[in-house]
Length: 377
Image 1 (tube, rainbow, N blue to C red):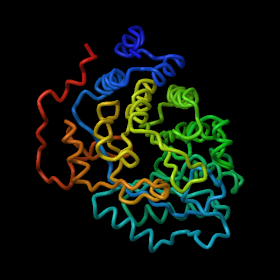
Image 2 (image 1 turned 90 degrees about the vertical axis):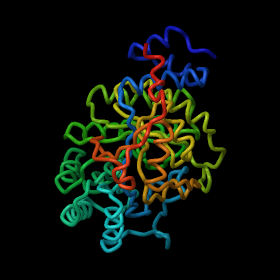
Image 3 (image 1 turned 30 degrees about the vertical axis):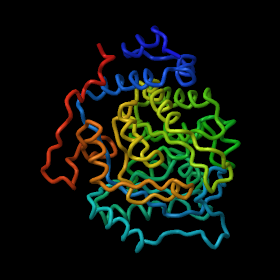
């Protein structure tokens, strides 16, 4: 269905779309027109033909988790013989390998381990910071809630102590869909919508930046998908603490939920609506890890301005059946072939240089690389 002229003009003017308008776009909006609108938003926020990415490593320090989420194929509950907790020797090796590839950030996530209190994380973060010049992008709102609960601390106290010990930022993991109905279905102990948002709001209030995520395509309705975006938009209005939004499709293989994965067209449709609705988010990432590099390239014309992480190591999504991998050279080439200049960045989107693999090479952009601004005037 063609997008209404009122909504087209509203998006072109940088005005906010309503819940009903967002649901209509997601359900009925013409696919290519939707992509063009999202692309116009992207170019308005990022007028330079640059697509960023980060070199980091996703280290799952433990797979022990009491949440038992139905969509997760990675966790193990105690007393499983397959449960683990990484020691410093193995962590050191992983961090050193990351730094050798140019990485200066560790994405450190695990599960709701019943035996780990805040002292464990304080000692871990202090050791990491004393041993390596890295940015610790770690935990998740559910993990923070769990640490505070088992340590009998308020969120403010727990986050303050974690920050003092070396935690630099929090990823948006565990958001899944911010609907309590959905969360009751897919997660036994993952926490409510209000609890996830509270952790992020408290973190922002303490001066910490975070990212926001959405895993979609399982049991949620289109309306619940839009409500998820509106929760994020409302919190960003209050705090301005989110640096980016990342959405990916549910990977059903090896999970209790099972079912069919959404198509790439459905992923791109949701990505475009996300870019339009989240008008106060500076950046939106493409999910090549679940979609592959080709759809990742198309994502850069459907609202995304960032190619995410090199993902030196990833366990949770791959455990559920997704196995896409790229080297830095392949990632940089994919960005270039899509008509953009690849640049390395930090978690807070400071550009730190060209791809390591290119040395001093300057990519040539195809003619008309900025043609995606066709709706801007």
